[in-house]
Length: 312
Image 1 (cartoon, one colour):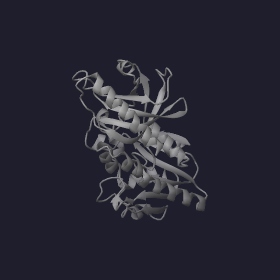
Image 2 (image 1 turned 30 degrees about the vertical axis):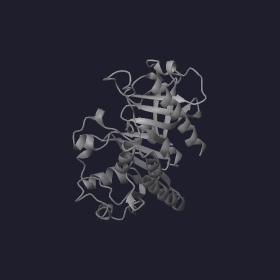
Image 3 (image 1 turned 90 degrees about the vertical axis):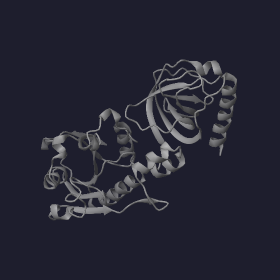
Image 4 (image 1 turned 120 degrees about the vertical axis):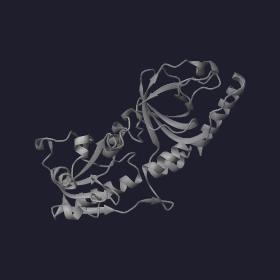
């Protein structure tokens, strides 16, 4: 997959000459609703012998429109994960447009000229609620008027699960509630975060549960505080594990939040290694124990519950 970074205004020479089916959206999470758009684009690409291209933005438009601090934005998929998901879905060209104030000022006509016609789109695919400016004048119903017959348009209707719209907001709410199975059904894959193993306080080893302390990528939406059954990718191999998102409240107050994974049946030094953590099942909330012994007893039960989850 070819990745092209665009800053407005861009040089036309940077755009591939290939005619494309262009999919429009922000695609946070690249969930089942987004996947429906890409599948439609792939069908059209085969019919028309065109490449499949996707245009997304970085950062989220609300950073510009609502003046949100970019460091406070939390995404279901960082750019690196979004890129890998797009490639796995068969996208051939990914345009990553830097969402700036100058880009935000484009009129609907300018957007169509520069970012549909300019990207050599013969056909576009977008969701029913896609906008490219003020929603009263830059919605999907108005797009044919701006197109003037120069490209085809496929508008994908609302995608649902259990009669409710599949959306990034719904997935975030599920993650915040610890409803991992629902979030993963909406995503179409297990919610995954990336990071690197860093040194912690090594307390888990003294408890008989040595953990990998994960410094996760910045800007990631973290599931609710608690203990989980997870999978962790280390050196291209997936392992089962139990993970804690929390503040280690049993030992002291006002600690920073940590993400720690106890990898089942694993005994290797992996400090400094890049890892991916796939969140599978919420086991319990974080508990403040009266001492070490009750904590160890609970950790043993967590391991039993984790193994039982993966066994079933």
